[in-house]
Length: 262
Image (cartoon, rainbow, N blue to C red; front, top):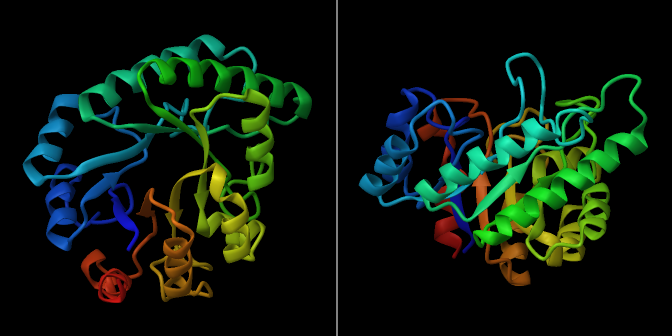
């Protein structure tokens, strides 16, 4: 059975953030992720991990002004110093939390900025981040996010665009963060696509489509997808990154079904 993690930015939001670790463990999860840790002292988060026997699976590099609409700064020329400072901040948290992989959000391509310049900036920043993370034995993920529904203008909106950047960067510790929800919207054909991309995939996230709710609320056959990823030998984490259509505990039928099927 795949190793399932709970995304605490989306799940268990019925309780304050620091109480969600215990909720995840009570539900049967052994790993957690969330968008960003930076609003809390690292030691406070580490204590929650220790107290609940959880693995910190992943979190994102600082994204710029998230509240102001930025979705990553890696593709933005002129922000390189800020990006590098963010890498160092993320590394500090990764050390404290025992986290072995970080995700880089490429960002939105600004209106009027040449796409080639945005991509060159991204490649240079990813190459820098990969080098710094390699020194610590940490994997860097790059995520493709759909530009049709959730993030219009996001620079890396298909898996092929991510793979092209990974190949140009040429670092051994850069992998694709493959989100089933986003790629169902942009590409579909999830089973064959996942098999083809498996050598590049470092981390998987999921939600059903449409709606970005729990498995079983949309068009994706998750029991088939989970079984196929198991058959293919995917050994990484799979993170539930969905918005429950009910209270979180009531949305976990897929989790129990997956455990019974294993």
